[in-house]
Structures are given as structure tokens and as C-alpha cells.
Length: 266
Image (cartoon, rainbow, N blue to C red; front, side):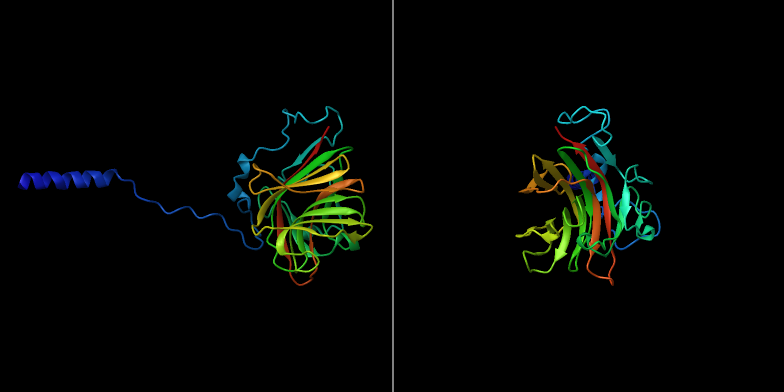
């Protein structure tokens, strides 16, 4: 009996040694405020390196027109310096950076609106000539009225579309924090306002201008896309780009953009 007891104890010890210990999960990266030194990408949680880009050099999108137009296939991954062709509107060099957070363009959300000509650090470039698609991903956490960050389709200060994350007090179609598609024609916001509940900080946004209409797509990871709207577009965008702004002088919050892509469609 004593020998049997020793054998059972040995088996228990051996079995216990074969069971791997449970390790606590690795905490997700967290970014708060502005860092004066280089930090990990704020898009690390989305495994940005694994995202398949819409257009890749050497393997063009089959829907693209074969043309030497320099705006056909454009992508900026915001690595250390901006690609040629960008222009700043009301630039404040101290309020944007390509080095505070590696591989991202960081723009501080300052007081200003495009329709009033007061927006700061609006980043624009020429739009493709014809039907096209633009895309970005951003990290933004709006929590005060009229804070916004996202894509812009621009014809003038009175005719433009801005689509991205924002916060708006619940009036005139606003839903507090969410994804907003705001269209201005003749300096007036078209109603009803297009707004969708979205409480995450990271989102991928794609705008498709085709046959006189605008289709909006969003994605949580850059892989699976959801159509969030389709509407007529009564003006031709001549510029495309990025914008972040708000209606306050007292609070400045950052928006991070992971890339910008433009594709000319057939």
C-alpha cells in the first residue's frame, strides 16, 4: 500500500509539471495626452502592419485606370516627413508633428471651422481628376462640443464634406459622440445631419466619389468595411485631405492619422 501511495503521489507531481502556468494577458497600449519623446504607434492595437492597403506599389488595383497621372496612386504613411504635394491652410507648425508618435501625423485640434475660414492646420492636396476614393485611419477622442477630426473633400470654404469622429450636443441631428458626415453647400450645413453612434477612439474611413455621388465606408480594423452612407454630391471636390478642429480656445486635444491614401477609379 505504501508503494502504491508513493506511485500516485509521483503521478500527481508529474501531471502538475506538464500543465503550463496561466500568464496574465499583455495590457493593450494606452496613449494619453502628448508625448515629447518618440512613443509606440497609437495604432498598435489594430496591428497596423498587417492591414492590407487598398493600393500597393507594383500591384495596382485592377479598378484603376492605367494612366501616368501623378495623383492616380498616392499613399502617405507619415514616416518622418510628408510626401510631396501637400499644402497647409493656416499652418501653425508648433501644432502638428510627425515625430511625437512614430509613423503617424499628429495634429492638435484647435479652435476653428472650415466654413468660417478660421480652421488651423488643414492639410490638403489636389484631388484626382475623375471618380476617386480616399482613405485614412485616425485615433481621436472627442468629448466636448464641436470637436472633430477626419477626412475632407474640399471645393471651397462654402462647399465641402467632412467625415470623421466628432462630438456634438444633441441638437439638430447631433448625437453627442459619434461618426459624422457633414456636407456644406453654399456655406450651409445640409440637413438632416448624418450621424452614427461610435464610441471607440480608432476608426478607418473611406470616401468614394463616383458618378456624382458620395459613398462613405467605415471599418474598425481596416479589413472589414461597412457602408455608412450614400448621397448626391452637388459640387466637384478639387482638394482632398485631413482636418481637425473645435469650437473652443481653452481645450486642445490631439488627433493621430496613420496614413492617407487616394485612388483614381475607372
